[in-house]
Amino acid sequence: MKQLKNILFGLLMLMTGLPLIQRTVPVFSEEPLKGAYEIPVKPEATVKTILNGEYQEAYNDFAEHTIGLRPLLVRLNNQIAFSVFDTALASGVIIGKQRYLYEINYIKAFKGWDYIGDEALRQQVEKAVFVYKKLREAGKTLIFVMAPGKASFFPEYIPDHYLKKQSGKKTNYESLRKAYKENQLPLIDFNRWFVDMKDTVSFPLYPQCGIHWSAYGVALSLDSLIRYIEKDRNIDMVDFGWNGFDQPDTLRSPDYDIAEGMNLLFSIPHYPMAYPRIWFGSEEGKTKPNALVVADSYYWNIFGTGLSARIFNDNSFWYYNTEAHNPAWDSPKKTTDIDISEAAGKADVIIIMATEANLYRFPYGFTERLYEAMISNGYVKASEAPVVVNAEKEAEIAEMMKAMDSSPDWKKMIEKKAADKGISYEEMLKLDATWVWNEKHKQGK
Image (cartoon, rainbow, N blue to C red; front, side):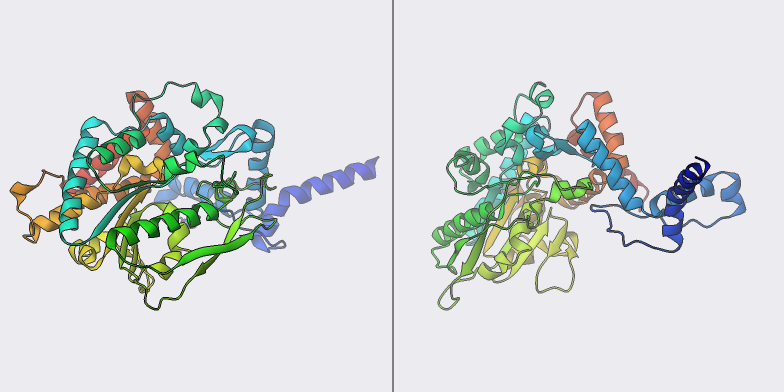
């Protein structure tokens, strides 16, 4: 009996000391955690920081993030929360019925909880109409694209407590869709198209554990987009299609992206996905227009996979109108460092795209900035156009909103403030980002 107690005590001591051993002399190979996070820098001890407690607090944070076996311990904790309490510890992740995964912003958009308001929408559409007409006169093709949204596509799997909550009187999606149609703006609505063909397609348009459209959905949408551009510009672009599908046992990126961010020990069971075997025809005798695309992460499925490079010549992607990517560049650039007149002048086709969760910030300040460039370059008289806000300011605020939204601590604080004020999270996010911008420029920084 005593020997058994000694063995158990020894095992307990080993388990307690193993993280420290792993941190000092790594014994096991550890898979890093997925998602965006920063490992704190080891703080330097000074008399002042020790006496006021700053060093102890900073070191505690550093030790917590660098302890041995931390990824395993985090995954174990997350798995217990998921399997036992049906809870996701990843920020913004919602576990739906039958374990369909969502991000909360998509549900907010579907329910109309992030509606930007009638006046903001009116101004946005007014600017879009003006810019569209001027680009049209210059021989440019401007296309507004509404990418599909998972909440609109799978409302039946949204948890009941969200569905039962009162919806907003309007949604950004329906309001923008109606306004763009009424003003004859060129709008491609993949969101409505996906819902309409949901029960008739041969393969899934959305993964169960991911937030982005499937490779099959991308292929269908890209084919539709090419046909639209060909008709609008009266050109013949590179032929595009697919020969059959691969249906592997494992999912390809990004079809498991929400679940990856949950950092679980075990994979979530899911239905199989189909991946079209894409082919492109010869470029001989075909037209490859120059393209400038301003979009959210949905366009990564087209740009990042190299599909856009096969159909477009110069191929620029302005991610949220803050960070510009181009295969010809060594590294990304800030869009505020790029001459927007030159970029738009070089493009034959300009595409502005957003999924439903990002329509509250659509079109990311791009049309405002382009309008101001037209004024400053003398292309348009100020008296000819609607009054718009400072585009550079709006672009910087949009960048701040993105940074604040991606910070768990900041996001939690904004959510509390929004609840206290009785306004939407997005409205509070914009208010806080604007306050930060004003303080920054008030101080001349």
